[in-house]
Image (tube, rainbow, N blue to C red):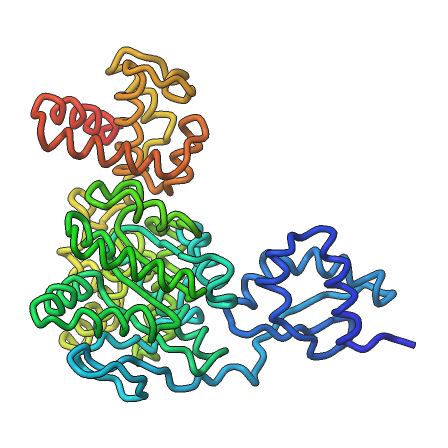
Length: 460
């Protein structure tokens, strides 16, 4: 007698424990359920589109292999969104700080609301954000248990806030009674100051340490140098952490690169998972533009060649990429013209990088090996020395400069740069880039020397 889909899935998961970690199964596979068997396919329902794409990419091949002996025939394991879980209930928000803290379904204008568009379904995953997205999804599936705190860092406009709020949407979908408090660090600072001035610190502490299930704080780098605020944040963090409440933080730098932050806070920020979001590569930028077009149900269709043109010339961040779509369509409407590369070149003239007017294909970028070769020659060392583990000063400085130039000139992620320099981690790359940037701002001769190396690489 053939097994039911439910029983088959249970046996496959049992077998999967031999090849996947308990954490992976608990985070990605246990929240699923078997929907049915259909012509050599075992259909599995996942909670959302993000989980579908992740499981299809990471686990479907292995699971299909495990399914064959269980079902006695070749069987493909495929994932679909479980339709019964797609509706999201109304979230709870805190009322304004100036009134007693109670849970309400009305969004008070003085409290930062969550953006309903910031969900996992609308987040476009690429190499630059895969780790952060996976960690965010895991935290949403097991709040307070899997990654707590979750610390996401990266430059402005790359999706940190999107991921943070996606966690809140998912948690409240699964647990509608969740009390969410989303604030910016600057707002937290202002509330501390106001509470001290008005002598309402007990109320402030109760609101932040007792009436919260999910604590989201944007831009914690603003806490640098604020001693009184750091003291309150430290005790707030401890109270929530000890109560198994999920904490999610974002910053423009990793914890160890926040010099004005107390060591005890840095330590706590690293207790869970620290994940970075880097600059998207070309294919990722094109996917982001397509998602924006699909998400906004735009009346005018933007041809693929125009999307690629935009992606090739706008490389700063996701927010600016999406803004280019809106600007281009508005420009087309005002000019009463069809969307084309020529129109995009005219509409986005302020976005085209110097020297790239679009009349020819963008200039090829130098390779990482070329960067290492040029810097090594100019600083009197060898490329092999830059890639070595040695930490002597004669190698450290040019190595940091080469990392800086690789970050500035090439479409490489932090992890990729680190691997090209002897397997160093992304935090080392960030430290190197920041150190060179600061030195260039202080030392004219140093800046000119780095710029000469950059000019040589750009002239290749």
